[in-house]
Length: 452
Image (cartoon, rainbow, N blue to C red; front, side, top):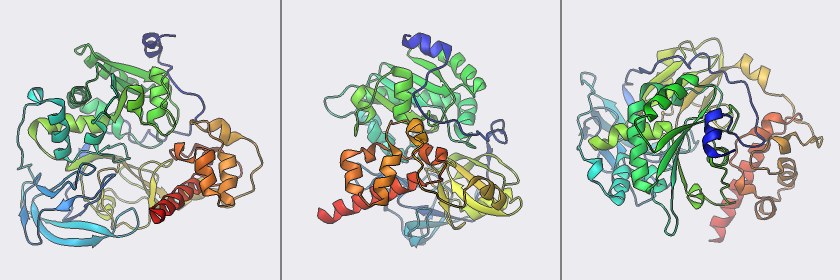
């Protein structure tokens, strides 16, 4: 079946994967609302993949909303902007969701300020060359808002000798509970198309495809209608399945191209971006403004007012949950979705650029879903059938149990695993395979650093 027929019939997909319960009903029809500003905001200098930004403010300095407060430290870094008008209270080590404390800026808000964005530098994107767009994108502080937090300007820099013909826009949102991207497509469609055109110009792509799972018919209809104004932009409808939104899975499903082991999408002529990333870029870049807030799905059985909220970066989780309320006995809080999100033990950590969701689970919900005991592998091969990369998680798990981490990497493609969690989800023995793989990767990285 050719590409146009595949997109028309809407069954584009990849082999393997799973379909866990979606749990999207509480928020998929919830329009985006603004969360109030917290009295103080914690702004880690490392909110992205790469080198942390460098502060350009000092304690006691007054700043206005949108003003740069930290600069990029080289190409693999992005600046940071003030999410509100106030005064720099402290610069030092503070808690983050990653665990160890990291260098951060504490901003105390002025309670009487209007909190309008008071810093901008309008610019004409149409008059910019691709290299100028890439530089301007870096100045916005934009990173991937789907969770990976990879600097967007780096993704827009096509490696020498390669050509990108297609910009792929990820609107799948296959993680359970999360509906952020769904609402962005419905409510910020024009910003999204502006961002798509920016990305296409930056990488020199001839076309763009927006990939959306078929459980979002309203978003599909809205964006297809908008596409009628753009000859080079189309919507590709995809089967609802996890992890349909992974880069390699989307490229395989919509273009039937396979990203090589250890390679990146540009190797097969594709550049992939999350819909929220491009929608923000479309809104910010023409005004020369920086990323200071993002849409977050706040949901779960432990929250009283689930919904999609526009949250200022740096807002402490404690403040977020005080505004929206706990329901029953909240036992665990996850940043992101349940499959690839990160559990946090403290409420005194902030919302950062990569936080797409805040999932609050009750102790009852945890007890009903998480097994209490891990059993030996029964060789059922469920994990092999589920792995979207076609690895052998059972074999990798046994090697991990023997601490053969280097063997896992050299001979069994450990680094091709993107930790989607499909293997752990389907394992009847409740073996935490993906956690084993994360440990193996961390040990290998540490060993390489020691050897360097």
